Image 1 (tube, rainbow, N blue to C red):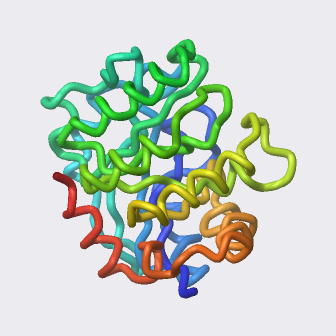
Image 2: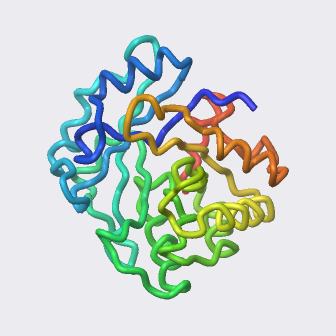
Amino acid sequence: MIDVVDLHTHTIASGHAYNTIYEMARSASEKGVQLLGISDHAPAMEGSASKHYFRSSSVIPRELFGLKLLFGCELNIIDLEGHVDLDEVFSAPLDYAVASMHDVCIRSGTMEENTRAYQKAMDNPKVNIIGHPDDGTFPVDFDVLARSAAEHGVLLELNEASVRPGSYRKNARPNAMKMLECCVKYGTKVLVSSDAHIECDILRHTSALALLEEAGFPEELVVNRSVELTLQALQEKR
């Protein structure tokens, strides 16, 4: 499997990451990345950038050090109705968005409530990716989630930071396996991401790729195989 794309990465603007946009882009270029996405945490995350940071993001070059750059955001789902912490005015310049649940921004509901929150977030026209749904802190019905993602043209993320040894996310590896099984059932496309908070973790997908191999997951459902497939997948949002 050719792995040349990493869309879930963070810079110092997230408040708990350690490199600038330019440092991340230079490192990605040196690693052979062809498409890098910067997805800093939206404002509900403690210490992250203000909403104005995202509204001004059109000034960021979309090519640096010979690689294509996309600027997105990791939106925080802030309630069980699937609302996120950037409205359409401040999210308008973004190239894409990841929608995730974090325990500092929302308290878990039931499995049905969490699943519905993700489904409602998919209705947001800016949301292309559901981030780390493997985190057992927020139990979900993966069958319903995978079906809804396929219907909306939304990608489900296989997150390296979740499935690698020592991850703090609950039951992430078995949850990810269940998610992949359901993605096969519905033809749901998957994005492999590093969730890098430091430049040396960019394109660190070792555990995630091993999990795909263990699961026998169809290569055609993984969009990271090329820049073109990834960009096409981002355009499939319905």
